[in-house]
Length: 413
Image (spheres, rainbow, N blue to C red):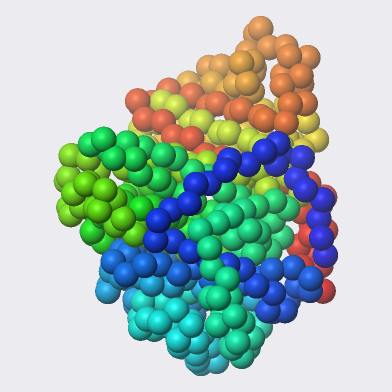
C-alpha cells in the first residue's frame, strides 16, 4: 500500500556531501515490497569506529541483539539494512538469519562478520529468509559509491512517505569535517531510545567511547523527545560510524569524552539528530499537523518530559488537534494524569501565543477565535507552565487522524 506524501514533508532536501571512507548502494531484494529498493549496503574503510543506542523494548529484534554484541569491538566495516521485515520475534530462525546475513555481507565487503552491523524494519513475527541477501549483497558491493544519500534513505523506508536526511559541516582546528544522517520512521514511534532506524556518518577520528558519549547524550532531546503513537518498536537502532579520515588532514583523533573539542562535534551530531527526529514526527502516519509541546516550571527535566509526553501521547489531545479544536481541557486532563507534581491553581496553558488558561481557570481574556486560528496552522505549539520549579522540556509529535487507523488497519494485508 502506498501513501501520499505527507503535507508536512520538507519542500526540499539538503544535499549531503560525500564523506571519505563511506560508500553505499541499494538493491531490490523483494523482501516485501515490489518495484522498490529494500536493501541498503554501506561499506566503510578500515579504521572506522562505531557507537550505537538501541530500543529499550524487552522483545528486541535479532539484529538489535547482533549489533549490541558487536559494539564492544568498536570497529565497523559494513552496514546492512533491510525494510519490509523486522526479523523480530522470530526465535532461533531470526538468530540464524542475522548470522548468515552477516557472513554474506562480510564476504562481499571483505571483513569479519563481527565488523558487520545489521538493522531490519517492517513486519514483526514473520521469518526473514536470509537467502534473499545471497548474491544481492555481492552484486550491490560492485556498485557502492559516496552518494546520493537520498537513495540510501529511500531504501530503508516502510510506511514513510518521504526520505529523511540531514547534514552539518563544522570546522575544528582549521579542518573541515562533516556529519551526515539518514533515518526512517513514521509509526510505532515512542521514546526510550530512538524509536526508529537512524544512521550517522562522519569523517572525524573519534574513539568508540567518545563517540558513544555523543550518541547516548544526543538521543535524549532528539529521537527520545519524539512520539507518534506511544509505541516503542522492537527494532529501534541508532548507529554512528566515524571513518577517521580527518586524521590524515591534520586533525588529531578525539580519544576521550572530556576532549575540549568534543562539544563542537556533539553540537553537530545533536543538530543532525534533531533534524531527523522532527522529520519523523512530520511523517507520522496520517499526520496533518506537526506539534511542539513545551512544559515549563516543572520540578525537574524528567518531570517536565513525563508531563509533555502525557500530553503528546493522549489520543484525546491528538484528535482535538486533528479536528483543529482548541480543546485545552484535554491538555489539563493529560497534565493531571501524568503522575507528576502539578498544582491545578498554578497551571497556565498556551496554544501558540494565545493564553487559554491561567491560575486554574480559563483566561479572562481568552479569545476562542484567536486560539482556533492557531489550530488551523500546519505547525501547532502547545506550552504549559506548571508553576512549581525551574525545569523545562520540549517534545515533538503529530495529530491523530483517520488515516493513521487506515494505515495500521491494513499494514500486513
